Amino acid sequence: MAITIYHFPPSAPSRCAVLVAKALGLDVDIKVVNLFDKEQLKPDFVKINPQHVVPTLTDGDFTIWESRAIATYLANLYEKGDKLYPKDPKARALVDQRLQFCAGTLYPRIRAICFPVLFLGEIEVEESKKSSLEEAIGFLDIFLDENDFVTGNTLTIADISIAASLSSIIAVGWDVTAYANVAKWFAKCTLEIPGYMEINDAGAQQFGKAVKSKLAPGQI
Ligand SMILES: N[C@@H](CCC(=O)N[C@@H](CS)C(=O)NCC(=O)O)C(=O)O
Image (cartoon, rainbow, N blue to C red):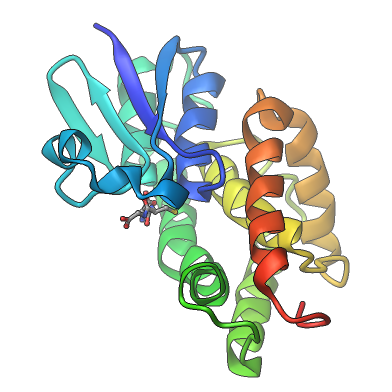
């Protein structure tokens, strides 16, 4: 059955879905939905996903969205081994917790800074939003104490989700060097996540450039 991912490279969640498909060695059809041109609101796409967000995945007649739900769906169905999304309940719970951390804490704090700049005309970032993001990156730094990756010493889909999110704000100019574990882990992810440069880097840079072009100087 053909798998299609509706994708927009500047979107971190969207890059996460495509990176996970790549890490699993899947041959997926990528259909770009340009959010800057509001293509997600076209009737054909809204028919597929009434919530009109990317990433959206179709696998034959099955449709799902939410990047981490896509990641776990793909790993559950198509992973040959059990490293990216371990089957052991405790190891899996830890991956799930880190995925939820990305969905519920890290990514929303990045979005709270970038969305109003990109789409609502804000040119300055409130200090409270900056400190809230610093706090989340600090939590990530603690998760990485004595670990190469966010759940231990093996790359999982949680690393892919978090790296995709964090790369967006790094591309805006956010400095993570004060968080030694995060900086080391991020550099490792750029080398070890399959297809990172090709799939993630250009999109993150495009996102960073778009946000920076609208921000007042010296904001980040
Ligand atoms: N929690 C979702 C976030 C998806 C999301 O908000 N996607 C944005 C781009 S980053 C989007 O498609 N926005 C278009 C819209 O809401 O119309 C996920 O992880 O997939």
